[in-house]
Image (tube, rainbow over all chains, first blue to last red; front, side, top):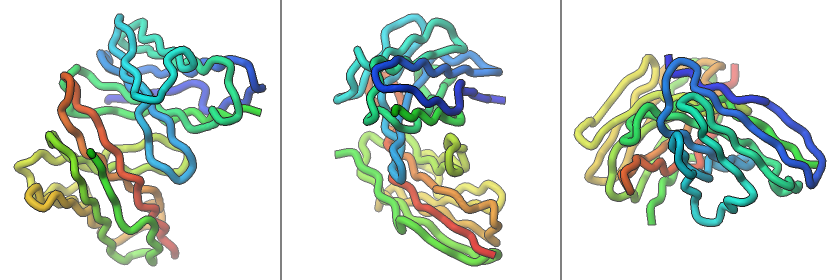
Length: 116
Length: 114
């Protein structure tokens, strides 16, 4: 149990376009989902926390207008990278938790974004 | 500042050997400490989770220890296998604003050679 999927696994896009990444909890309801970014040989950096039906909470330094997060249901959260630029190229990972007072986050397999 | 530091940055061992990875943290208020395994190009997978009162926890060939007084943890891998080649990430959780917020270490890259 506690499987989290992401789609797509890899995406290549042109500079200036927008890219949407989906994160789904397959066998549980995720009241809270998290989005992380990971650059090569670095650790995961939390971008934002989202709860179903409410606005996401962004970490300091993360542009909320550039990284749009929607948590429309208890099993789906989306991250849209708007007007992507080469510096947005990274590995994006989501995680999901069953409740607000979290004792376990289940991670998705990640999405590799390359912006040309 | 809440930080998690891991050592060594990278490690190469021969198949069948044991190894120990270290994690030091300065995180407050401490909630729990987790070790994750992350294969290249994949998301992290949980190995162990320990609360303040737990000193050791095992998961197969993986054994984690926690010293909450010195704020140190270790992950011991026994009888390493080629499939153990991955990054091992120490993550400390603090309870803040109604959530458990995860503070990630940079990871130790382990390579197991035949």
